[in-house]
Image (spheres, rainbow, N blue to C red):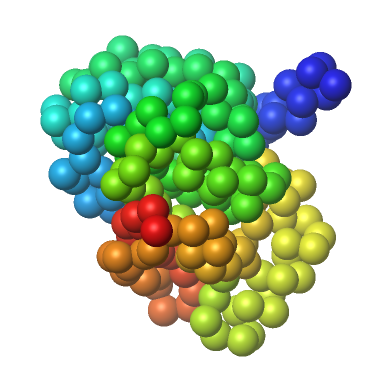
Length: 215
Ligand SMILES: C[S@@+](CC[C@H](N)C(=O)[O-])C[C@H]1O[C@@H](n2cnc3c(N)ncnc32)[C@H](O)[C@@H]1O
């Protein structure tokens, strides 16, 4: 069972492609990462940290980041990014569905471009809720399901066929904000925008960036 779980997060081709592509998209995505993390304080858990591109954007008011990343190649890159960060970042192997943290032990949780990929979205959000202290917050930056029916139909078709297989388990059409609210959070800040900001949207173009508090 343990061996199966470890193997299920290995995406060697996707991981290398994501590491390459995400670096090239950083001029456009970096400002959103920065806004996502501005004003955070204290102890933070970042779920699915990938190659660690958020680390450079944490403000120095953050005292510790526990960065959980199950994919081995991305985790190795995250460890290198952690060594260059201005705040203490500890990178560990782990899964959103079982965070290695005590109840109510964390001031804030961060997800960026990861809730599309977790196997069980409700369970991941329940874990984030469990580890957040009362008054703690969830910061999220995610690509989500489209408002426009024609793009939503394309997303649905992709999610039912090739997309999760070629993109490390990613789904293009998730109702992530609905899931956050269903998990018992109140969303108090929410921006919706298209990324990249081009006229003809891609299936992964609709994005949200926001903050949610525990009810
Ligand atoms: C598209 S990448 C985003 C990486 C990073 N958060 C960023 O903003 O660039 C999706 C990440 O989610 C991670 N992931 C997928 N399933 C996960 C799970 N169940 N628990 C934790 N991380 C997961 C992947 O390994 C990958 O690093």
